[in-house]
Amino acid sequence: MAVIKVSRTIAASVERVWAVVEPVERHIDWMADAESITFVGDQQRGVGTKFLCLTKVWRIRLTDQMLITQWEPQRAMGVEHVGIVTGSGVFTLEAIDADTTRFVWEENLRFPWWLGGPLGALIGGKIVLAGIWRGNLRRLAALCERPH
Image (cartoon, rainbow, N blue to C red; front, side, top):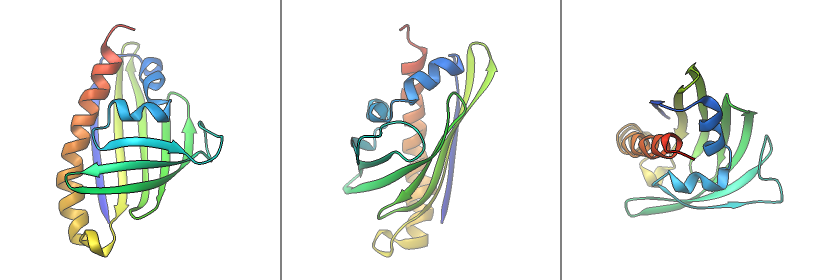
């Protein structure tokens, strides 16, 4: 299992950061590895929301099946990965002050044997994905920090 954790301080209120993160379908605006998001069913917000995320990392493309398991507006959004890659993840938002938010993204992922299993989790997760996600958080910060 790969435990991947990245974080960033964003010069925006926790309300503003949540407003950008809350629409799951817009995660493709700041996640370089997410090509598309398709909801399974009518629900698009809150615990129980199911969606498919077409994910591409280098030449590897897969559909990540996810279920939202935690939904605390302006505090946390958690998911369970139930597809090819399994595990769980959570975005946590913490107000440092009225205009600054600490955003933490933590995932615990298991990779299938054909993606290298534990070795793939170590290399693909801790090195490759962590680097991609740090870039994702830079893009998220840029979206949150620009005038709206």
